[in-house]
Amino acid sequence: MMKDDCIFCKLANNIIPTNSIYEDEDFKVILDANPVNAGHSLILPKNHADDLFQMEEEKVAKAYALAKKVAEAVKKATGCEGVNILQNNGAAAGQTVNHYHVHIIPRYKGDKLVMTFPQSTVTEEETKEVKEKLSALL
Ligand code: 5GP
Ligand code: ZN
Image 1: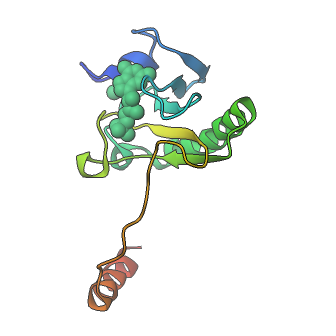
Image 2: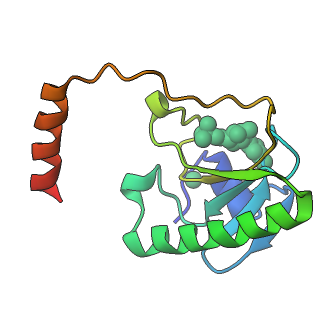
Image 3: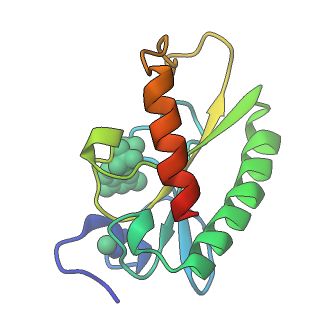
């Protein structure tokens, strides 16, 4: 199902033309309009889901299998040194388009994308508490 006024619904369902590199029953893969490096691709489901939490588990499995296929093609086509698979959920996590998508980003040493994990400030007590909560939920 498409959502009104969702740009990625329009791109995924051919309402607006875009640089598409692959399409199947469930997904369209396009080139990002503002790529980190040439070949930066986005996997878009044809049915609208805001984010991971609204995706059916089976579709997530398919999206991730497709991410492997796209990553292999991106690596071969660009000769990149590495690949990031990135999937943001929520504004706090950097999501700017509220239609689930998976980034496949070709990477080179010293390129302009900086992703670092800062030194942790999580205490042992917080780790213990969250471990108990998570273990009970899973
Ligand atoms: P997010 O930050 O939500 O994970 O990523 C959104 C991505 O979508 C960004 O990398 C942005 O460049 C890309 N994007 C936003 N609008 C368009 C568009 O209209 N066409 C294409 N091809 N990419 C888009
Ligand atoms: Zn949508």
